[in-house]
Image (tube, rainbow, N blue to C red):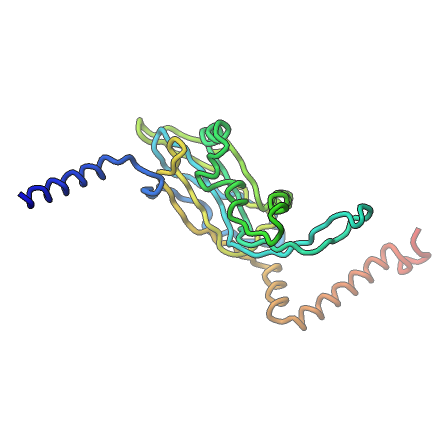
Length: 264
């Protein structure tokens, strides 16, 4: 009798878990690829495009995030001294923020976020999510304002961006569709490794996720200058002074007394 009860309990529990709806935690890997896998920063690098594509369920939406490593920054806090002069009022320490954050979402995610302000927070993507994650050494009353100013600074630098509704789809049968995102890499991107994250979303719940790495490196003249600066600082300083002197002589020849008669 006891054995029968135990087996009955096991069967009921198994049936219960089999019937549970798929949650945000029980995600599957999304079929994704990105091109190129390596971005080289040369002398005339002015930004480039990363193509992220893949396949998701026909009824779902998608978000693509290009994210850099977490860093700690010390920024100058500006304000009016005695209500008169703008000047530095101290330093602000910001922790747990990525050095790059580029977000692309499909139109459906944008519409969902417009109807529910907490969508970004629930999904863990977007600038609201970044604000919740960042740590700012400041009084509680100032943290939100400082976080907004930090995000504004990064956006102006082109290192943070949100492109809503800029993912295209192509239907692939009745159950699947292909997506494509042309992700813009800004000119100020730093060398290093970046995370390409693709999130599949169904009715505001994450049902699939894929993560891959993108490598950015410097080459050519910028690579040589960087190597000199970090590994041969004395030689780097000598060349910097030499270049400055030569540039000054050239400018003087064309626009100064070297041309004869002085500048006009």
